[in-house]
Amino acid sequence: MAVHSAVFSPWRVPFIAVLAGCVIPDLPWIVRRLVDASSFSVEPISTYAYFIAQSSLVGCFFACIAFAFLFRNFKVVAAYALLGSLVHLLLDSLQDKWGVGVHLLAPFNWEALRLGVFQVDSVFTHLLTVAGIIPFLFITKARHDARLLCLNTYRIAGCCVCIIAYFSVPLLFISHVVASDSRYLHTLENKDERRGKLLELDRETTSVTGDTWHTTTHIGEVLAILNPDANMKDGGTYSFKAEFDNEHEIWVTDWKRHSGARDTASYVGLLLIGCWVASVLILGRRTKSVVTDKAS
Image 1 (cartoon, one colour):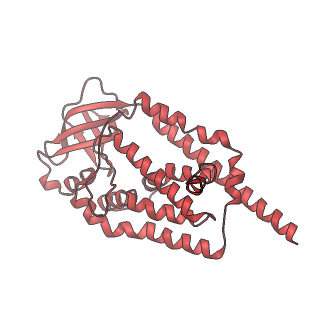
Image 2 (cartoon, helix red, strand yellow; image 1 turned 90 degrees about the vertical axis):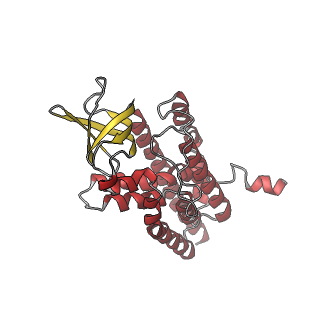
Image 3 (cartoon, rainbow, N blue to C red; image 1 turned 90 degrees about the horizontal axis):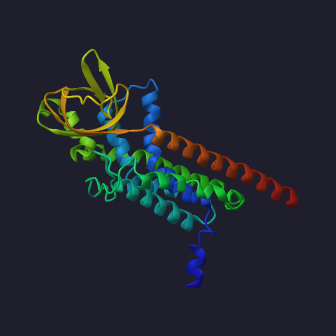
């Protein structure tokens, strides 16, 4: 029991492994935003399905193993990173994000888990966001992380193999994701069959052209809103529950407005984690240089 508790003591695992669990499930969506902001032309349905498959627990597994190869205590780091990813996904499933879910049983089952216990903009979400600052109070642990780095040829090779798997395995499941109608991809793909079908959109922007209101779906398609609410604002961020009236127009049955603070908090969190990773790598190089000098 003493050995078991020592191995899994939070003071014996790199803090960076905990931070990895915070970031890895979101990596596909970070890449997606970069793709959307670029001039690359991609097929929207297949690309979105690819990111869904990559952000599933099985996708996170390959990323966690790739990450763990960079540290001496490989098994413990992999376990903590994967556990952190699982907790991340479970917390996502608890949020009431319309049309959005997590895939814990993939590739055996692509049904999205959506528990919807609390709102995205709730006090609980804000408390979790603030709690994310706590690890950075232990900034001295960056030196501990740096000492556990193991960047030899074999470890880097193993990391690269897992990274290749991380990017290639999701390609096998694109058709399965679309067929499951995750994020309504099957509905959006079959335009001729849209009439009367339900659609849920999470945190999309609105715009007004003349008297016509529009919103943009997660695959970048613009849809007209036939019954906009008088309280909606041009350029606002909203979630919608709707029904297709025809191929390009929807009737909104429910909606809610979101603030932009969530995205700002995400960017700040990613910046802090990036700084932690950079400090670990810098300290790791310095530690290696000191050891080399002493040996010589």
